Length: 240
Image (cartoon, rainbow, N blue to C red; front, side):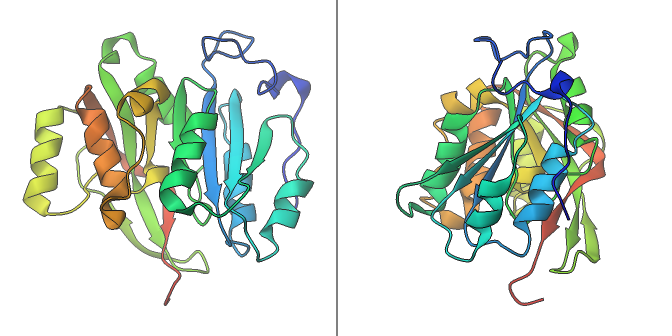
């Protein structure tokens, strides 16, 4: 499998404006992929990011000193929308995710784990919500996702909310009521980049809640919007 090629009309990562827009004035979206020893899956993750129907994207892979051969593949990608950042030393999940946030040039951002996949219209569908003037106080849009095994076979569909806008109060209550992260894993969410920075970035003080604690920090700044349709995968592969 190869990485999709692009035309100059969709190459914006080297020409973004200070306001986070592409040269055509449309919002630039960052898809950041934190990578560490994920050779069996990282190509599929990168392909799904570069294959988005919304063209004005940058794909940034931050590699945390992989030793499984995946770096050779990542270094070989030639696409003007793509950047590879290599950490000088292994820094762990918290530092690597925060490096992704620091590297983002887009107004909006999705953190795509290197073993997950974005469906082709994920960015376009979520961005339409965040760019709607009526949703100026919506800080992120999130979707249902397909939980898959290491071979990509669907195990279940994870969804927790009806489609539409959800107030921060309701979403906070639902997380407490269910006793779990009802928003989802990182690939399920497109958030406003500056809101993510204002939230203080990612914290692994509670490692299994690193994504949820970040979502809660975003919710201190506004509401959310939920899609009932799956727009990404979440892969379980350690023992399956």
